[in-house]
View 1 (cartoon, rainbow, N blue to C red):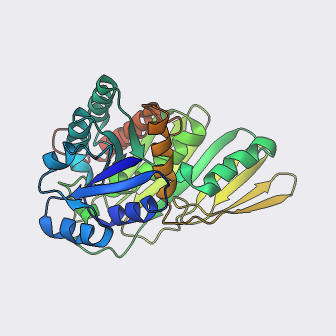
View 2 (cartoon, one colour; view 1 turned 90 degrees about the horizontal axis):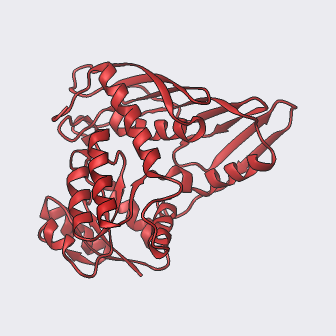
Length: 321
């Protein structure tokens, strides 16, 4: 049994609990949040204990792993504290504000011989795994281009994605998914070119960037002012893949081949979708591994490095930059 504690009780934590309830060999011990009211409501709904302080949660003997679901400004602080307390850590994306912070986290994880993984969900969905398996026997050829993005219009003015102190903005709130897709299919980014604007906010309200990788090119966008489509396109020499919206919660894909044949993949997900990465994480603990072979530490390094370069080019700075 992997017993979980949760730091932060916002919307994503409720989705985490929806998934956790379906994972065999996993249980919930309790949660902590900066404000007492939401954590009390959380445990009233899901059971477990409402911890009075984060230290009380981290020193609890009946917690094996911690899910960090706070805003990105505190990801490094809580990840390091949890690792030093002897807990395995699954941390929401982006796992840190910048590469240097991620390196600090990974150094502690190595020192403690504990598992640390960034919670990047798409590759664990049944559709994504079925897609990767399908092209092993029916390939689209070497991939040379990826196009992906999402723009979410109509958020309330006080939404956390607009918080500069909380490390908001399109690049930090949405683009982690896009840079994952580019890095997963194209490898290391050799060049990043970014444009973005801030409007009346301190964070970017819409950004677009193109990247040159070891294997090709990507065009990516993210933001809040426009109503983006939310699909993804992956192009190879023998065909292309469309992962239909919302591609980061993938359930349908179309593979269109150069020779004219078309393959439709349809793999619905259940329990909100976070159950697949939770199950993977629990299996890693069971096998006494300290790094995921899917969301590797080097992949997390590459993703935050791409965001670092994109932020620098549009002048998006946070405390400590």
